[in-house]
Length: 167
Image (cartoon, rainbow, N blue to C red; front, side):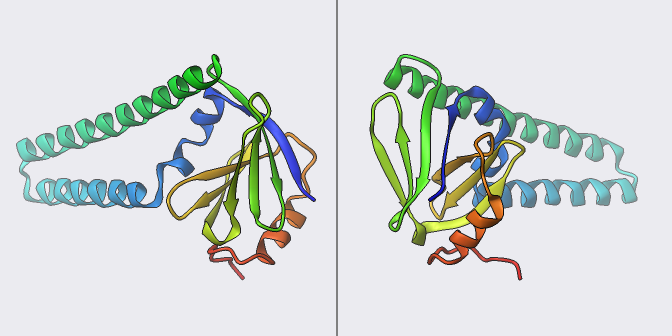
C-alpha cells in the first residue's frame, strides 16, 4: 500500500526534535516560560529592574537547561544506535498494513508495529511525517520516497486512530 525507506541519523534527530519532545513537555515549557514572562512584565511595570534582571536570568537558565536536555537526549539516542548497529545511523522501511504502521530495520530485519489505535498525532517536518503515539513513540514516514501524502492521510482517516482530524 504505502511504503517509504530512509535513514535515521543525527540529521533526523535535529529536524524532528520538536515533534519528539512530547505534548506534556511542550505544555510544561510553555507554562514555565509564560509564568516567567508574566513575572518579568510585572517587574517592568513596577520599575523593579533588579528583579526584572533576575527573572531574565532565570529564563535564560531555564532555556539553557532545556537545550542541554535536548542535546543529551540526542546523544543518548545516537549512542544507542552505535551500540545496537555499530554506527550512529540505521536504515528503516516504514509501511502500512491492516494492523498498523510497521517499521522494518533493514540491517537486522527486525520489525516493530505501531497499532493505528495508539496514533495520537501526525507531525510534519520538511523531510518527514511523524506518526506519534499517545506514549510518545513515533513511526517515521520519509518524504524523500515517492509519497502521495493526501492518499496516506485519507488512509489514516479511515483507520481507528486517536488523531483529532481538522474538518
